[in-house]
Length: 228
Image 1 (cartoon, rainbow, N blue to C red):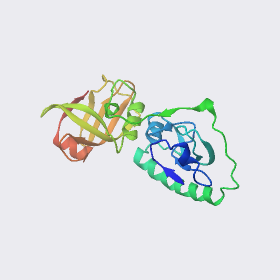
Image 2 (cartoon, one colour):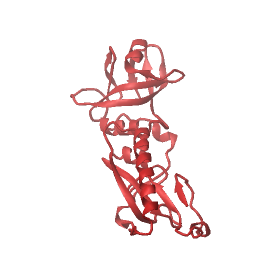
Image 3 (cartoon, rainbow, N blue to C red):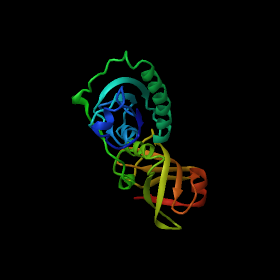
Image 4 (tube, one colour):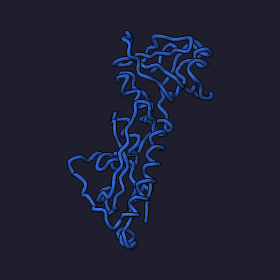
């Protein structure tokens, strides 16, 4: 039996029914990021590498022995969606390889010293704290795309306190002065926001009740002054 993204613990009677037990394709290099949201947590934490593991399931939460692993780099532009797609390909390759070599693979016990947990995402985590660094906020934006999408409250000359979802941004290398959440450069396809450390250049956003827009179209339509 092969299990992928099931989200439930299997009882012992089920685990012991198949001749070769139950195999799980897990989207991290265990024991790092055991749990429900390993892809998002890896990006959020700023990890530069992840992968997939083919695990022999037991009664614990992602605690079984590892039969096979494949690694994958996390780029600075990866979102949860793009990383998911890369790991899905690795997972398909890995499970085929594992099944073809099942009787020859040597199970490896997980190192208890490296355990971290990837708890399920909550919508409350999507709110941006602009006092964090530009790097941390960018990781949040990438980790929560496509769900639940990082968001903030925006103020402009046309509205106040509307929810603005941010789908993509880049960390600005130049030094900018400004209080966290202050829009320090705006217009002509540019929206640069000060953070607790550094600045972010917004690229793709969605105002509440509106369609997703690139920053050029958005800045042509609205004059945003503050994010909070």
